[in-house]
Structures are given as C-alpha cells and as structure tokens.
Image (cartoon, rainbow, N blue to C red; front, side):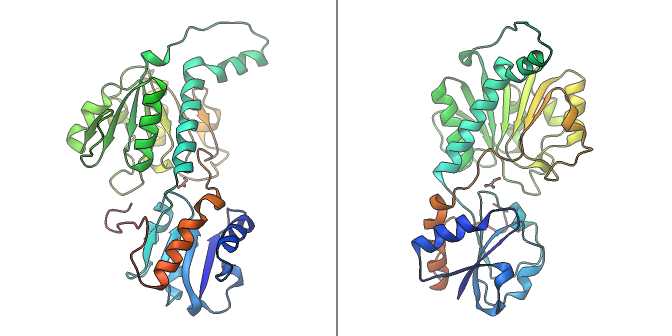
Amino acid sequence: MSLVIFSKVHKVQPWIDALKDLAPDIDVITYDKIQDKNKVLFALAWNHPKGIFKEYSNLRCISSMGAGVDHIMSDPDIPEQVRIARIVDPLLSQDLAEFALALIMNHMRGLTNYRLLQNQKTWKKHYYKRISDVSVGILGTGAIGDHVAKFLLATGFSVTGWGKNPGNQKEYKRFHGTDQLDEFLRTPDILICLLPLTPETHGILNKGNLSKLPQGAFLINLGRGPHVVDQDLIEMIDNGHLAGASLDVFDHEPLPEEHPFWSHPAIHITPHVASLTTPGSVAPQIIDNYRRAIKDEELLNVVDRKKGY
Ligand code: GLV
C-alpha cells in the first residue's frame, strides 16, 4: 500500500524525507512512479490534474498539502467514499499572523511608498496612524482566522471578526451569518480575508461588500484569489473608496503578466507566500492519518464534503 504525492509545484524530496524519517515502513512515492494504481491508498495532493482519482479504486483519503482544500473540492470526479483531509498546523497559522502584521505595518507606515520615493531620491515624510488607532476586521474566523485575530489583538489593534456560524470567541467581537455581514464591514480600517473558498464565499469581496467598508479602508487577501472580484476591487480603489490592497492569492497563479494588478500603484502583490507548509512540521499528522485510513478509523482534520471546508 502506498502513500503517493501528487504535486507539480512543491519540491517533493523534503516531503518524502520528512515522511520516511518518521515512518520508514511506509512506501512513499510521487505519482509519476506509480506502477499499480490499485495499491494507492492515500494521496497527498496539491493541484492534482482533475479527474485522475477516478482511476484509483482503493484510494481512501486525499490529504491536502496545505490548509486549503479548494483545489481538491473543485474536482467533481472524486469518488464518494474517498475522505478528504486538510493540514491544521500551528506553524501555518502563526506564519499567516506574522505575514498579516507585516502587511499591515507596511501599509500603516507606507514602507513600499518610501521605497518608490527612494528610487527617485526624494526625501518626503508622511504622517501615520498608530496600532492603537487602527481596527482590523478578520473575514473568516475558523482556526486560522481566530489565531490571526488573537495575535493582532495581543499586538494592540482593535479586532472584530466575521464567521459563517456563531462561535464562542470571547476575546473580540465576532459577527456571524449573512445577516451580520454588513454590520461587520462597517468598521474595519483594515479587512483581512482568511475565508475558505466555497461556492458561498466565491466573489464575496465584490463592489457591494467593499463599498460597505469605511472610506479609506485597506484590503488584505490571504484567502483565495476568487474571493475577490478583481475589476470591482480596482474600481473601488480608483474611485477613492479604498486606499489599496495587499494581495497574496489570485484567481490564476502565477498572476498572468497582462493582469492590471501588477502595475496598479495601490496594489501590493506577493506570490502566495503568506504561509508555506513545512514538511517536517506536518508529517506527523499525515502519517497518523495514513495509519488511520488503513484501519478505516476516523481521520484527523477531515473536511465536510458538503460544506467544502
Ligand atoms: C495555502 O494557501 C494553504 O492552503 O496552505
């Protein structure tokens, strides 16, 4: 029985090494080395070619190589009985929180702008807000969003959150459900999207919702590209309602060369680097899930296929 890695974007050797170090008894291979598809019981996947899993008759579990599972859920041909799991890793949440803080501070202190001024040898000061004067809204208060919210709260920001369902967070005000979305959007100076991508959240950062943010608000998208309606975001920045955006995720990655985001002066782009999975940190939960899958036991961090996350 094999554990097979399906990814063209990761350097797979560190993954193989981390998994083999922990479980030398398990046959870990990459998908191009498969000899007998019937022996594949567990897949570790990132952006696999759609439709391929139909051919794996004994597959029991597909685990994402990251926190998101939208790249798996968007494949309509995954057999009903195959369970899907995601990575839940405190390192990933902390990396996202630190990255969010870096982007917020870059925006608040105008560091990118100073770099541009440096190119022109221009000495020009700008005033700035302090952390204690800034409110941050976390769109998506699941395990990751909640961690980011608490981290920013501890840093001194005022923080609110919005999630689909009521939660029991007490440390910050948390809105929930579509009914409370408008109210949530009314206050944050900085909105950070950390939602999972589902049919319900697709396009949520559209003109209608972005226009509910206060004048001069700033958007940080660390969720998925399709949360944002690209043209609407550009329009809301160009008409002066939003101050700008930092985007780490895009509809198509790599972001196509001709995309207007590249050259927009108020849009800051990073290449989906907010949190990169560390194989050594997540190998134990993958091995654990592999052993559970063999024994047909309940899996860790299993995804509700109906909800999509
Ligand atoms: C990154 O985007 C992840 O899903 O881990």
